[in-house]
Length: 187
Image 1 (cartoon, helix red, strand yellow):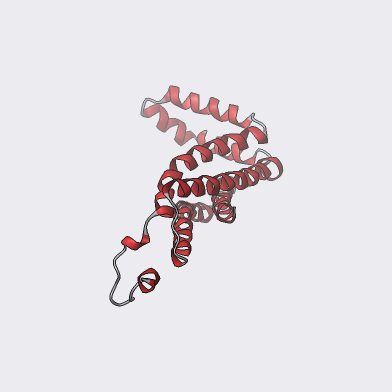
Image 2: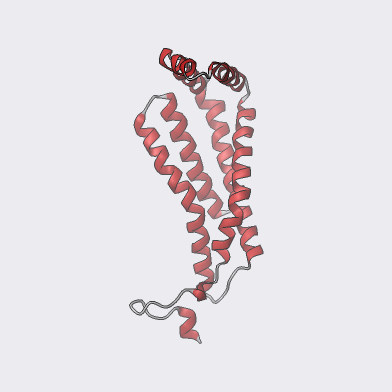
């Protein structure tokens, strides 16, 4: 639950920096968003490794199945926290500003000309229609769309994070400069 909170907060910060960067037309927030993409991707692996090291220090180790359960629960808490942040944003903060800014960006004359020149006029009109439909959704429906995306991503990523959480740290060779591991000292 604790680790899921940190992952959910990083996903929430990523979402908020992206939508506020788009809404406010702020390049700095978009750059922060790119940095947070890396943090949000690496953080679950770092937390799984932290848990693995903590268990290693007391002579324990997770099985792959236990690591998978850890990963699932961490990501589910992250999805719930991020869903709450997304709902608060769309329900109380946005007021349609994000979709109006996206519509403004997409309907710029240069953008329309570019799509027509590359022969994607039909796809362009479909994109505008989809944007209008998404703008008509309630805050809860928009939140559920983001939640479902995060849920799918979490299930796929859980299988990889479980490997890190359950990796046998005894396999790592001892470095002469750092000395033996705590487990090797006990043997």
